[in-house]
Length: 189
Image 1 (cartoon, rainbow, N blue to C red):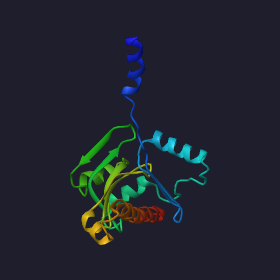
Image 2: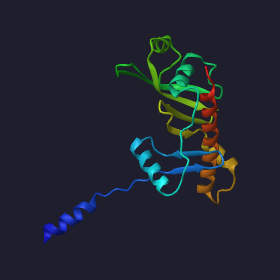
Image 3: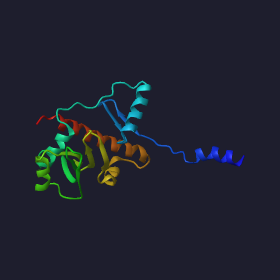
Image 4: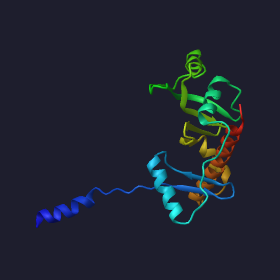
C-alpha cells in the first residue's frame, strides 16, 4: 500500500505550472505574448483561436528584421529613435555564429563580417532612450526593460493601484516601441 500511495503522490509532487501572459491591444491591432518559445507561442495562439479570437497575423513589412539589424550596424544614423547597444549575434550560412557581449559594435570587424554576407540574428537596442530590448531575426523581442522606471512610475500617478499603474505604463511604452519598429521595418532600403 505504501508503494501505491508513493507512486500516486510522486506524480503530483513535481507538477509545475507555467503562464504565458498575453497583451491584446485591439485598437492598434497588436497582440504580444510574454515568451520567445515557439511552442508556447503556438499553444497560446491555438488556445486563442479555439476561444474565438480571429484575425491573427504577423506584421507585413518591406524590410526583414535581418535587413533592419544589418542596416543599424552599418549606418549609425539609420535607426531614428533606435540606438544599438553592446550585444549581438552574427551567423554564417554554414551555421557558425559570432556573439558579441558588452562590446562596441561600431567596429571595422563587425562591418567586415556583415560585408562578407553574414546575417545579424539578434541585436540589443534601445528605443527612445526609454526601453532596452533584443530584436531577433523572427521579429520577436526579448529582454524588454523600461529604463528609469521609478521616475516614470512617480509621474504616472497614485500609488494606490501600483499594479494597474505598472500595466498602463508598460502598455504605453511597449505600444510606442512596437509601432515604431513596424514603421522602421516598413521603410524599403
